[in-house]
Length: 230
Image (cartoon, rainbow, N blue to C red):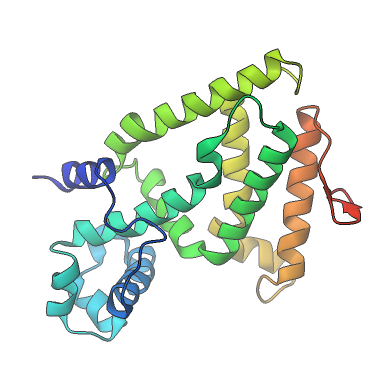
């Protein structure tokens, strides 16, 4: 069985490593070490031994949780995909698009701050042609986007937002929010910052939400005593 098939099967099945399920300390250590190793060396360059060394546990313990390197790789990618899609997964035509899109944008910005390595790993997989996620993109991500686009088309038909291409809007949100993880060195260097801080993350989220929502004819939700535009 090829890695591509194995990854596709793992992502299509009920996820053993789905976010929110209890993991023990060793499993967390393995996944944290794997993120760093895969980002640094790519899938081909990473090894189970290196992941075990970085995690500070025996290689045999890694195999207890993950039989093959491909299983570790899919667990890491699966986690970030679940996190990205978590809130946006259950949207309906009766929802307020300004509230939905504002929350989705803010969640994506927050994940760029809290899970930058996972985002970089996903970007690396896409840039390389998605050799291990191609089936997932066709069989899972494409239907997911089409389903969300259908809801947005209903919002447009109801006059809740301007007539824009929903798929392109989703692409815009993905790309603009993930930029702050994938190109953090560029952002921080140009802005003369050593690292992201809470105030900076909030400012980024405010800016992206206000800019994107106004571009589709929506008024950004008021947060506390101030609008996100302030």
